[in-house]
Image (cartoon, rainbow, N blue to C red):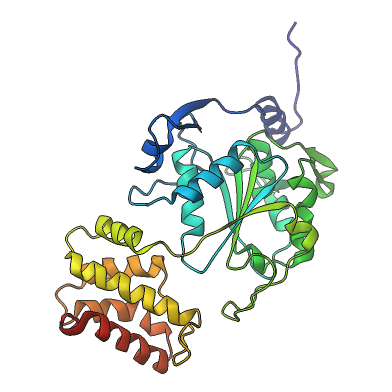
Length: 344
């Protein structure tokens, strides 16, 4: 006999529906080599991906993304069996932390709730808040509870992705502790509602530090996180890609650019990064040429190919205009040394 259920409002109906659907999504076996473009992985090695879906929270796919085998292996291990852990991905700015995880989730058809942290963020920003909302156009608005990214991810089985997590006040980040261990989320502000985690719910965070502060002084605003909170994460360190990988990336996004020019760009990027990290006592740089900026430089060089010096003109817009005069001079000297006559 079917049980009739009546709802006082649409929100209650949606909440019950979400509880009824809180089962793991159907998975299909896929080849890791094929799905992530890893040529040195045997074709018979497989992982599970969710069935294709038109869910708008699945990250858009970037066909030009190049994956690192170790990164893929460690992320897949976490997604398959988190065992009460969250995942903390850290590394220098623009090294591919966020793009790496979102592109993996895109190929696994796994929806994501993504948010970028800041120094004033509170745990309530993750849970949700009451807002004035009308159910239909023309109706009088009423005060309604609206889920934040954490609550939405827990209900629907999405990945909660918090970028720049080391900018958050450690007391606020500690609010995640019980949730990371699999406990329900209790929303006192919404009448003590209890939200149980969906089996597909995962938490991933990214940062420029590993949570222990910034010893380099390169990233203002980074906070030392609570050691008890950090104990609930497994860590992956991401650095800038190897030269061969960045050559491959640039060749894919600007296929008509001569190989010698692409090689020079990658060489300049690595030289600048080396100085940025403090490995050259004679020069100091407060800016770096990340993989993200490197790709921007390559694309803009193509866009401004009719300029007198496309390389210099594009680099000026991609990086140099946010550097101080001394840094601009040092970077231009690096470019001239690498490219020689080609720089003109």
